[in-house]
Image (cartoon, rainbow, N blue to C red):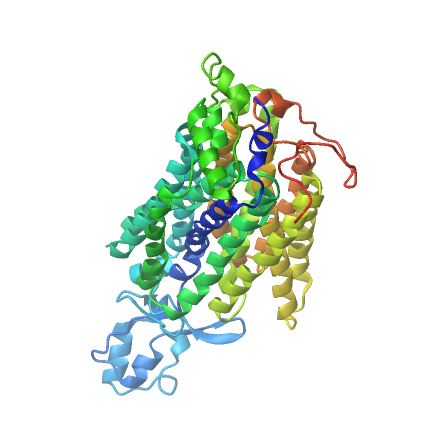
Amino acid sequence: MRDYDSSVAFLGTWGRFQLVVFFLLCSTILPNGTGSFSLVFITDTPQHRCQIPEANLSHEWQQAAVPLKVVDGQLQPNGCRRYRLDLLRNFSVNGLLPGRDVNLSSLEQEDCADGWVYSTEVYQSTVVSQFDLVCSQHWKQPLTATIFFLGVLVGSFFSGVLADRFGRKPVLFATLIIQAVFSLAQIAAPSWEVFCLLLFCSGLGNISNYVSCYVLGTEILTGNARVAYASTGVCLGFAFGYMTLPLFAYFLRSWKMLTLAIALPGFFYIPLWWILPESPMWLLSQGRVTEAEAIVRKAAKMNRVVAPEKIFLDSMSHSEERPVERYNVLDLLKNRSVAITTILLCWVWFALSLCYYGLSLNTSQLHSDPYISCFLSAVVEVPAYASCSLAIRYLPRRLAVVAVFITMGLALFSIQLVPQSILGLAVALEMLGKFGATAGTSLLFAFTAELYPTGLRNTASGICVMVSRTGSCIAPFVVQLNIFFKYLPYITLGALAMLSILATIFLPESFRSPLPESLQQMQKRKSVTCPSVFRRKISKSVVIESPL
């Protein structure tokens, strides 16, 4: 079969058809930006203290019933302990006063047997306050985020396989609906266990529709439109969704109202089923040439160009006599070079995901106002995606990814060297690390799509994203390492970034090369070479062209 991009070149690059596909697909990414990081707010832990029953206690003893502790140089109420109430009631009945007649430091303490009182200064309610995930139950708080990412992990695997088997479009819309339905159902969860089950199911659709949408767009669009979509379009769609999250959270301080606002927009995308097409490239890989040509002819009509009588000549002449080349997940491991590429890519994906989500979930610790912190973390993604767009056009893939890891590693290692009095510099370095993690993730989506053939592209992307989600599952617990040493999370993430440079340099290079359509074409890619940035290649590259 002739090269797909050459076959549809008569459509042009930025016609009406391409614009409709570009913006509609980008819009379906918005719920991912809000849904992925809503856990920053709905699982945050408000200030809390033990509930003190008023019976048989004077006002003075009610105020003194909770011991104080030093946190960052300031005295704060202990959130998990109180003085023994039977002793306090006895003192109150006898008219003794705390601090004057009774030395509080010598009193015995007990756990919060009557529950907790939560501050509503920042949040009206969160999942933590709803289900009392504090003190002895505090381990459930990071586990909640991990369960969500476990759902993302499982969804990434199955959605990739299903998309390669049944098509990109059905999986895209199925995962959008799954994400919306189960997010909405979380509001009615009667317990933490039920909430986590629904959260897991919501995670099944979260990043899965992102991957399906990404692959669908890169296979429909060509030339500069594909470059803009892969490097900027879907990424900015995610970033804009992310930036709206703190705005929603600021005005909707209840976790249930915030979840409702995030879930409902997912249902608005259902009518797009009758507008967005299936991937013609995927249809061709399945031998469904007639359907692929029908989509391209409709696109030609929208762009007001004349389609040739036969668009996919070789496919038309051989579709009946040639067996359809089908792949499955095992094909990623059957060939030695393909297996090595897959393993190395999975490690790089894992490292970037752990760094990205570790820094993103840590936003509530950056600033006294979590809404400002979240917005800063979201805004930094815009220049990251813009720089990624330039890197995709002009830099070899391995060089760009290595530069990202070096930037991220140095920034995170440097945070521990910043004096406490220069908090702004520490925040800036963490944002530089987030910049690197964001740019690297965007680069890897393009890099992965360029390395694998059409029949395996969605499966490979799904597998890589699935493995990367093990990193996101670990991220909530990496953030908790600050219990042992304040800078330990940054040191861990920085070391991981530096180690990943070794895996990156052994990957094949895909810069200025056409998308492979078979495993044989993929195996011809060379690895461990140093292509010059300035070397000109005459190629039918579908990813790197001159910018508009």
